[in-house]
Image (cartoon, rainbow, N blue to C red; front, side, top):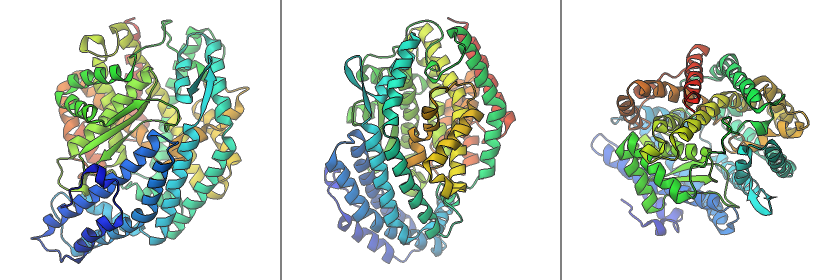
Length: 568
């Protein structure tokens, strides 16, 4: 087994890994050596995977770090193609050898799908795609404006959208929009490059289009594009009317005739914006207390990450957008990346990413990398792990549990969370429907102006309650500001499906929090050893696309908003 120190691993190249893969390829597999062989394969794959993830993380924590970008590019050019090729040979050995080790049924199914897609000629195209991702992060991470005499990132400007003064919100949002539109053409150019690459990747794999390629790459064995269309229709029938009801209530309270985008985030209680923490240290300590009340083991996991330096939570210029959890699988540690600026959304992001991190910790008990790697766990269920954690922690965010808020503010924060989730489904439908259209019509979809037109059409279908008049350019370029569309195509419907699963778990937790957490944790520990519907069932939910199931979730969320609002 290879056991390098992390600092040494970061200097490794393909020559450090190659002998192990060669030995594995030369082994004659039988029932006596298969487990030892899988453990050696696990060890070397964990090392390559962690090396990549650490190099990637370094490019996101500082998008201006040229050396970090060069190290990642060198890995992608020199190590990644060799690793993918060697790893593919081992998958073929296992598949063709006829052995079926315990707990490997689902991973073997996945390997067969990966093997069918694998083409050597696509490896350099993946390298080019990774370079585009880094370039896109650089563009988005550099966006900043001057506000009240200080330079502020786009993420930091989101605090302005919570201001009670509408003119302040409008002015701040317009500054953000103006800065984002300044990058319109460069993002359009990147989009053309993305589309050309993906069209070629699909063609090389002899797939009818990139959507078909991506569907298989994402291991979507349990639902189809047609199911996604059904889900869009269910959202249009249930979540959109609920969002319209929320919008009408918002217009009435704010005393406005038309609801603008910058009106969506201000608290309707008339109280000052929620102030959950003063700095990242305070946020981290309070999050630990909240996790402890869900399950002491979860706070132990979180405190370990904090103590060992696996959290990067503050926002700063030249830091990539968004939040994510990376899995350092050799070290058996997840890493949480976020962009906290002092708003409730930061709390939700950290609780969400905590769910991902705990998922990783629980799955580390599985012996083989192929059972618990990022590609092994269905993303739809990975997002159940994170979204359900947002709901499981919600009873404990008040100061009585060491959380973030007074009891009244905790109720306000919970309303904000539920309302945001209700509005999320229509937005998710826009993002997902847009991508289906793009890859069903790849030639037209490569044209940024056509993309603008399609996005505007979908906005009117799923978010008719937002008045964009006078800001049409901002509306139609919304697709430019959703990183998933550019960097992780088709990775978005997972959030919508997972939110349904999370709300079902929440409903059970309202009756019996302890048993709901036990079922949730049991499902996390399965990693990627069960099929998607079974993972949902083990967690206490059902994978669904229909209006009836979604409607019950919407009904619960609206009723809970009313209950919580009556408390303040």
